[in-house]
Amino acid sequence: MSHVFLYALAGVGLFTLGLYALIVHTHLLRNILAINVMGSGVFLVLVALAGRTPGASPDPVPHAMVITGIVVAISATALALALMLRVRAETGRARLPEEQLE
Amino acid sequence: MAILLPLAGVLVCFLWPRRAKPLGLVTALGVVVCVAGLGWQVVEQGAQRYAVGGWGAPLGIDLYADGLSLLMLMVTAVVGLGISVYSSGYFGRKTAAVFWPLWLFLWAALNALFLSADIFNLYVTLELLGLSAVALVALAGGADALTAAMRYLLVSLLGSLFYLLGVALLYHSFGSVDIVILAERVEPSPAVWAAVGLMSAGLLLKTAVFPLHFWLPPAHASAPAPVSAMLSALVVMASFYILLRLWLEIFPLNGAALGQLFGLLGAAAVLWGGIQALRQTRLKLLIAYSTVAQLGYLFLAFPLGTSFAWKGALYLLVSHALAKAAMFMAAGNILRFGGHDRIADLDRVAQRLPLTLTAFTLAGISSMGLPPSGGFTGKWMLLDAALYTGQWWWALTLILGGLLAAAYVFKVVGYAFTPAEVTHEASVVPARMEWTALLLALAAVLLGLFTPWPLALLDIGFPFGGGYAG
Image 1 (cartoon, each protein chain N blue to C red):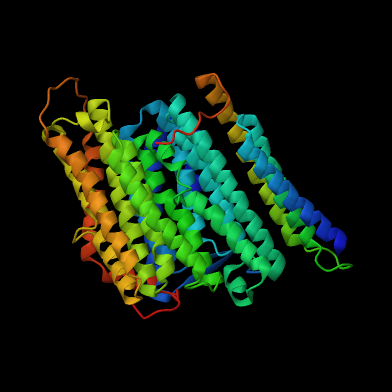
Image 2 (image 1 turned 60 degrees about the vertical axis):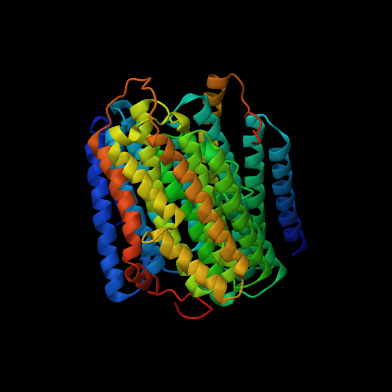
């Protein structure tokens, strides 16, 4: 049980790390990567928690969810990268302008 | 059917891009017919449950339709038909080939979301919805729209991941993602509270509740007019709908401290959105901030928690969808007509686009909450619930918000009537773009006259917990 818990904790750690990176960095590529790291964290949590009872074969449903999640994440990343290239082509910089606080 | 048909439409529009427009319109009509058929079924036989592929609840994917999802589907169908007709006049041939598949895709995702019976399916549809919405915003091109789309995408993905982590925790604790099964098994524990926090945070971000609204105005204002209409009217409904389902069906949280927090955020959104709308100099940004304010009202139902308040909020949501779509369409007409949407230069639109201005004003009446509009009914129900539960400060917010809305609507109308030098060549606005805006606005106002029917619909298969009967 404990090593399963370790994996889950690592997943939460990845999630937090990604969130931190997303907030701190301004370059869009880094932001997209950060989102991906967060996604991997969630997937790790799902996979780790699938083996709930030690000894028994793990629950297959979370695995199916992770597969679905990965498909979604890949399409999202593709869209994000394409959009980033367009932003760069239009503005010359691959980052978002600072928030204008009115 | 309501999901498969638009998906088929997507494929067909992709394959024959030149005929995308007629094909898209036919699909839109087909979807409306499907939703009407489903509506008839639900009204006749009560809530429907359908197991896709015959697998059934714990393992397979279930679709579920009750009064609440039917109401959402029907609003989407009405506004969606309006948007389809409007866009057929708005886009040139080149953009249309891209617009139609994306729009039908978004519609399919919305319908799937309102019919989903498990929280993981909700995540997938939410993600599909977000991706197609972002692509539609980017359709406008130009630096503004692209950066707004990029920010929207990052926010939307972040919100979805928070939600997904919540789903993972819930699945771990109770071994199911089905809403009905979860509702039976859930009991308070630290994991559940963590899941509630994560999912609520993600969904609040996506619903653009103050102070998480920062991404909404630029995204909604820089998109093409029909896209702004669908984002502001329909897409925001989706995440609120999920929040409502979780709150009412899974978590027994009525009247908890979290509800007060939601109400506080909602109240702040009403006031802040109203004030910001008043300060804008561009028409589309004004309407976008008005969306922030209108979304705030919905969250006032959380601290009240009576079934009357929930219905009021849903009523408000429906009339908001109709009115906001009409407002953005009217703004699109004005933009097309004069080539700009600076409020101060809206000279004599009244004389030259009378239908559009009427549409804007009628929609404005619903936003302010004047009788007999749908906005009035919704607000009155919330007001009543606030006084009934003795929480008069929420009632105060409702009234202040209405005053602010009146101020910003009249600001626009006032400028439109002010005579000024004509400085630009006006271009022609197709008649169907004017008429769809007007009809949707009329629907929003008339909604107030047909109150009992939608409310009766909500009762089908959906026990609004707690409080006195509406």
